[in-house]
Length: 148
Image (cartoon, rainbow, N blue to C red; front, side, top):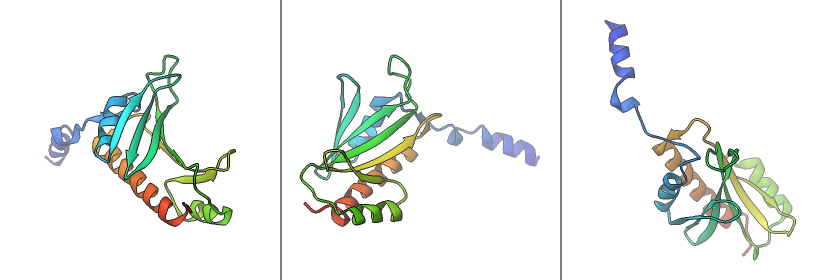
């Protein structure tokens, strides 16, 4: 009887959640719009351009097939060309924070990135929570690291 109950629970609609994959750019953009503006930009490569609380960022797509549609991971990316960052402060960020990494690029601009594996898809709620972590990371990076 216990085995039957477990099998019924396993097959229930509550377990059959919709998964979002990196190849579903519109679904990712839709979730990002819950935190600010977001649009799919097409050019040499396709990416999502967004803004959260006034901060411009991008979502890039990686590990894609030849035609760029079946992607496996995404990266949140923001940079500031009008900010100063002390190396010890950015090193402290990388030491103390788990999700988003920071560095100074080859033009001396501070950059914040967060990689997300979507190889087999994740529930919408999980990706929405990930975007919220990105929002929090942007907010904390601006307040704790950047000298604007």
